Each structure stands twice: as structure tokens, then as C-alpha cells.
Length: 291
Image (cartoon, rainbow, N blue to C red; front, side):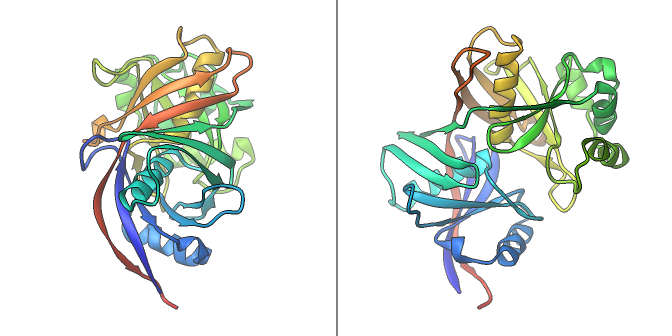
């Protein structure tokens, strides 16, 4: 079976920045095994597979190297950029059917804005459970870590400064202990999302990292879904004074990424989060799957 694909760098304004995602057009008909094998073949964190929808303009399926997930941020930006590249959409509004619900999109020039769903506030996790996952001290964490989701759950963990963030290094045993504390099997969900209230550059307001366990690559260059979850956390807890800011990620990897973020609604009644970025197509072609 043959499918057209576009490889897109999301949350980047030039090629080889931000976070890559391969978008397989009309590939939603493929089996889970085929989609997972494709992600592993690319060595990317995630890939998407599109198809028709009865409730939205397009259906999008999201896959890690281990399983399907309901939603992901940078692949959403990548998917819309790929659809635009193929002249399947123009400027204006559209909707995507995802496992996390209908995601509203707006395209204005090369800027793609997705409106993530209202956040889910989950359990707080003790700092002395989360800190060892990144090899830092509990006192390096300045606010109670909490499971948050705007479509995909992460443990939002605010560290005291950029120097601390740069020191974060994944400890596999501590990660397993962390998952055991949560009663969660597997090592590809609910990871701590490490964030500091300092930009990586003068243009940024926050800087973040997401470390991943195998079979995923060791670090995610830019995490759009966690950006929305983190924005909700920061706004609800009064850690940011305005609901709009610039989020940065990936700079220490040489893949600088940036998003414009807007939390919708007051801190105690958030209705959604707008996360906007650009996507650059770096290659296109034909993907061949076994029949």
C-alpha cells in the first residue's frame, strides 16, 4: 500500500528546528501495528495519520513508537501545515477529530493556532517522588507538581531556574518508582514536564524540557500538548500575571522551538488554551506499507 507523506518541523519558522513529525495522508486506515512500525522507522517521537471524518473536517490519529495516543500538540501543527502544503485547506477555520475530542484550528498565513480543550486538574505528586526522576533535589521544585491535561496528561513540574532545568537528566529507576506511585503501568505517559519561568532567549517567557523513556527518543524537542497543560497550571496557580506568553523548548538540543500561548478564561474557570506556531515542510514522498 502506498501513501503520500510530508515530514514537517513544527513550532519552527525554518527547517531543522522545533519538533519533527511525519504526516501520512489518508493513513488512518492502517493498523496500529503498521502505524507504530512507521514511527519507529522514522525515529521521531510521534507521527500522524489522517482520514475523513463525519464530525470534523479531518480525522487525525496520533502514534508514539509504542502506542496510539488521543492527542498531541506538535503533530497537530504539523498535520495542518502538511494539509496546507497539499492545498487540502486554505486560510481560516477548520476542525480535527481526535481521540481527545474536536480540536478547533485557525490558519492565518503561516501561523497555525489550535485551541486545546479545557484542562483536567489531576493529582498532585510529592516533590520527593518527582525530583529524583530528573536527578534534582526536591527543593529545586518551586510549586507542587500536578498531573494536568488538555488532551494528554503530564506532570507539570516548575523548577527554580534555567540552570536547574539544564541539569535535569532522566533516572530510569526513579521514573519507574514515579509510575509505581501513580499506579501507572508503562513508561510513555504522564512524564514530568520540566518548566522554568525564564525564557531560553530574550523573546521567551518560559522554557521547558520533556525527557522520554524508550522506545521513544530520549528527549522531545517541543511538546505542544504539554505546553497547553503547563499554561493552565501556571495561570491557575498565579505563577504568570498575564494569560498570554511565549513558550520556548528544544534550544539545548539545537532545535529551538517557540509557541504563542493564550489561556482562555479566568484562573479558576479555564475554558481552553490557544497554542500557536508554525510548521515547515522539510521533505515529502511516498511511504510503502505491507499489504
